[in-house]
Image (cartoon, rainbow, N blue to C red; front, side, top):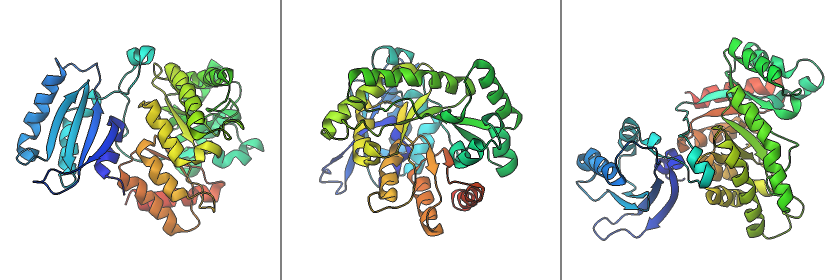
Length: 374
């Protein structure tokens, strides 16, 4: 199990390295590199360092359990496993630690970046794809989605699918926004399909991918969503070349897209829809190389299969998750196991039910309520 302190604060962490413990400790020691925002009102990094030392001197520094080293606008936080994480989290939150941290960016992105809003509690949302058959049959339209989620299921958030929308004019988006407000529902994100892949083998394909998604970033911002979901299966060529080469293409694509997304304060996430995105290690490498707080994963729980271990995939994606595509598992035991894994990891946010059909949605809400909020 990954260190829960790291998981809880992973949005502030760019790297973790295990060191040999000093002889007097006899335990594993971990270093956490925390990048600082340039918008901080503190006079200097040294001033912030002093504040941390003062705040934690009694609790943690009587023994060499916590030390800070300033290195190139980065704090190296060294800590042993047995420290009181709960107290540390509470005190850093009280200091406004989250507001002092920003993504690693360059050029225009860095100048336009603002601290990301954080969800501090869990909630349940409904993915429109769970009822795609009803929409396609004409039983209701996307403008009815907020009403269906609230009145039929008692769910507080909704996740749109772009291909189920009508032409996203301002008037249309205004109607969607008003419907959500009228029913007390939060617009969570837009799932974007049919707009290209995040790992194209050609330079023009990568550029077009970024351009195609801009309108959905604009729509998400207008609706008050926090993210758009993208696909990164990899083109046929990308799936055949080395993983190192395909990784370079994907990093370029998402860096271009983030240049547009960050000023709008919209996160960009990838859902595992096959191909390269089903490779958890490749995804971790991609997210770490892009190294941006506005970029992350949207793990689709799916079901266990011979060629896909959904539990292990979720485990590896949790440190980078900005949402969940929840699906009922073959057994309640496995559903409960995956819910508890997410909860214990420190993830806080939306669980978007994507299990197909009304009965499956109701079952998903029942299981989430039972194991997430108990």
